[in-house]
Every structure is written in C-alpha cells, then in structure tokens.
Length: 320
Image (tube, rainbow, N blue to C red; front, side, top):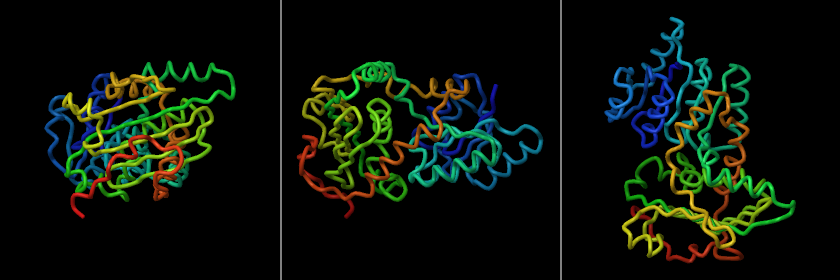
C-alpha cells in the first residue's frame, strides 16, 4: 500500500483521483484545497487529514517525512497554472507526482521539471488516459501497420458546454488555464500526435473566449479541429436529445466512437503508474508544445482548409 497526498481536493477532477487511489488499494493520508467543499472525501478517505492553508499542509507532510512516514505520491489536481509549482513541491518532498492535464502551460516548464527530477530522483507522471482507451489503441495499431507515407483526413470536434460561471473562474483566464485549446483540448491533441505522428504544420483559424479551431498537418494525418464551450455550437441532433457534450473523430468521413469509457480511465492510469508504466515528461511534451504554439496565434480567419463548424456565428463575451 502506497500513501498519497492530494492537492486540489475541491476541484472537479479530484474525485476521479480519490477513486483511483482507493481502487488500486492505496491510502490518501492528506489533502489540500483553499476551498473546504470537500465532503466527497467521506466516500473515499474520511480519515485523511485536510488543510485549507498550504503552509499547514506543507508542515504536516514535512513532519510525516521526518517521522519516516513520508508520502510516496502527491496527486496534483489544482488549476492549470499552479501545476508546475505543485509538481516541484511534490518532487522536493521526495515523492513521485501524478498530475492532471495539462502537465504545465509552457514548454520551458518541462525543462525545469526535468532538472528537479534529476536533483531529487523522483518522477512526474501525467494522466493521458486516452492512450489507454481500447478504441484509440486499436486505431493507433491500425495506423502504425499502414504503409509509410499514407495520410489520413480527420475532422475532430469537441464541444463541452459551460455556463457563464466559466468566465469568472480561473478557467476563463487564459493566463491561468491556457485558453480553450489547452483547457479542454490537450488530451485530444496528445491523442492525435500519439497516433499520427509529429506536427509538421499548425494553423489556427479561430481563437475566441468560447471556441478555437484550426488545421494540423501531422506525419500521417491532416486534421481539421474545432473546440467549443458554447452550447449554441452543438449540432441540432445533439441539442434535440438534450445533450450538452459532443465528441466526434471522423476518419475519412467515418466516425470513430470512443465516448464510452472516455472519463473512466483514471484507475487504469494509476495502476500503470504504480507498475512503473506511467506517462512521464517526455510523453507529455509534444502536446504541451502544440497547445502553447496554438496559444501564441491569433487566428487567420476562415482561410484555407478549415473545420465546417468554424462558420457558426460568433458569440459575444457575456461580461465584456
């Protein structure tokens, strides 16, 4: 049994990490969040120590370390812009770190973490759960078995509706979340590069407060992509069903369905990490570099080969 500490216990994704820690037979001994709405812990680890001041959380973990009861892992579920700091905290504590996506916001943060890994001897692992999805694994195996030079045409669409609260949270602040492409798209970009190879060309058509779209040329694919948090961009057929999320990966016009199991792979991710098979800094680097490059572009407009959803009417920011 390994002992875990968790940073960001009140966040949306934290329960998936608590569940994964429990289902892999391990223990959560301490958790931190500046917000105290963490009653979800009762269903997993009611005996875990909880702190809403980081200084006291830090002191508690240092005390455990001095008593030879230090934690083995620190799980990081905090806002994106804090990942780099919280990962370094875990490494310097002498623990390995499991961090949500995006691992960090900037490529140079990866370089710094590599140095801290070497200094401490501890490791960083990123949750890249789509690499564990059976449908995605099968698709990758098919692509890698094809003749060298074969290139696929892909339309990737991901719409995950968010209310106006989004814009007053840290997620609506690009400097903290990394913007739409980073915050909701990084796992898809990781998946695409993992399957279809390195980025050869990266063009952004649109980049606004509620959507982003562009064109990627990869070694084995040409990808038109569209990401949105605006419910009004959902297809009519999805709206008619009362659904608020739409995921689509069309390969040469044929739908690749991977919605089932999409959000249920954290336990498998933890099991792999505990067996020494987790995804480390090098595996996470390509997607961090890609979304950083996207973030630096303003968008050229509807020029060239753009995603059809890019033509949908733009929306005003609700608070500007």
